[in-house]
Image (tube, rainbow, N blue to C red; front, side):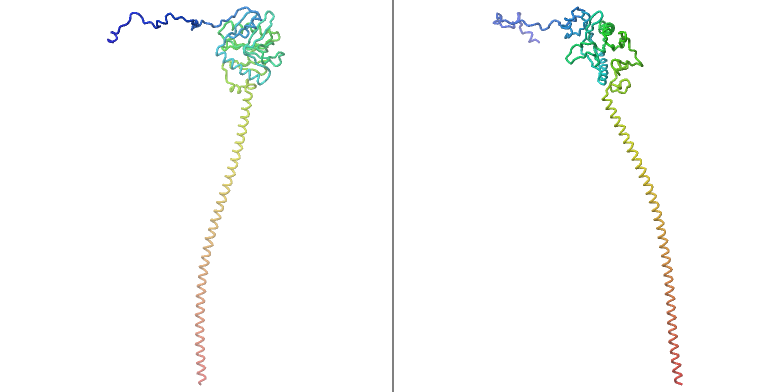
Length: 366
């Protein structure tokens, strides 16, 4: 630190640019400012324009979705994520119905239609709409507008814009009924403004009253839903188990489930048949084993009996042999006794013969 204190510091700052460049001039263009002013587009809602100007400049506006109410520009309210989730669920089930029934076409993407009403003209862009196949005016693939009257309109509310809320719940309700839109559904994620209308014979909307909590459309035959499901948004895989949605939701998936169920039932039947056959086989084997055991026991008894008979026969044979041997010995003894007697008789005969010869000799000598 002491060494640094002894370094002299010049009183004037050292110029950063060399002196020979001080008088140098060049035509350098001015650069734009690094930070631009805010150019966020502003809504022109409330501006009065002609229908021609609306179609030309505002119908496909890049920043705002404008509707036209008898010369006045109106901006559709910006939805929030919760409204998107609800709309996504509803769009999914209505698409399932149309895919199953093939009764009409679903329209979205801010495609508008013109409403020529008794006292005014409006151009509206419903969040979702249905054109039935029976409608005399159909929409073409390249159409950005619909030249007829939608059969059903659906609006998904957002509470971010009070004016938009009033438009959907009051103004459009009147306009759609006067234009002849057969059914108008208003879906509010907050449950406050949800309503379902059907055009009656007098050309006015009357509320569709839920039956057992179920709303059923007449425009789309078979299209019905539980009001509570608009807020709980159960997955389609659960809906196929519900009698309300079963007729139209995930039909191909249901067919696969039914096919799988049939295969399961068939497999169960086959398994049951196999088990039955196995039980029969086990029973037959058991019976055969029992029979074989009985045969074995019988054979064993026969063997024992034969063994007893053999022993008895051997004993009898042994006794007979012994008796025969005794008889043989007795016969031998008798034979020996006879031989002894024969020898004795022969000896006696010889002695008698000798005595006779001797007596004869004596007599002859006399």
